[in-house]
Length: 291
Ligand code: MN
Image 1 (cartoon, rainbow, N blue to C red):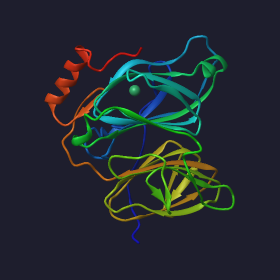
Image 2: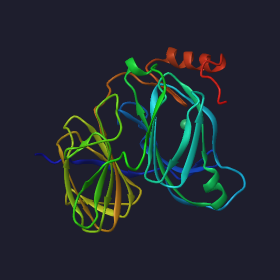
Image 3: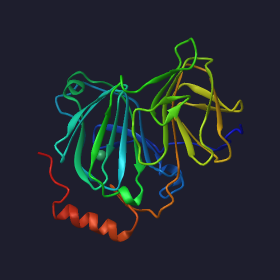
Image 4: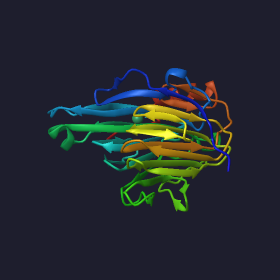
């Protein structure tokens, strides 16, 4: 097996607020402006590093907004976010859980800190990732996968409690909880100090990872610490990680979708005409309303 080498390591933008409830650094498009197929199928990644919110009477978050043409995946490490949308669906995303929302043809939704979190305050630690859809699925009916802690299976990496939580794909025979439109691997790696792991990813996948805690050495050479984002080359299959401290790594890879991209705000389509259509549909109310 050939080692997947590192293409480059970078950090997110200066943190800013999305609405008043998410303090994020943006990594995709990020400082390199990867706004096309560079990291396909991943088209946006916002990282809300651990941030403490004081108790409040007023719920913080992002009000009603649309999405069309892709999926939003919310990964909760700490905190509680409640969502509601125009399909009538809603729920709370808690620590250790993942919400995989296929916006596809379009919906309106809102994302706010839960009642409970608002009242008590606390630390929020979150990722939001946008996954592109192939043209043939962009106008599918919207739906959700609410992945609970029980649904996300773990692969035991050593006897010290290090685990890989398999959100999507397959890790050494353990299947991921999410079903995906195109081949995707997504792991929440929880590594204790000195944990030493090796895993394989298909050669043709775009592969990348965000260090969400601690520090790891990659392929026995490059050290990466909390908030570093690592993009691998499509030149091998094996990735080796060694934890220099108790660490967490959010690893993602996927088969690139080689189709044209037209993006505007919350719409990611294939052509400019489809973007215009999305705006028309918003104006004529076909995205629905949150009731
Ligand atoms: Mn949203």
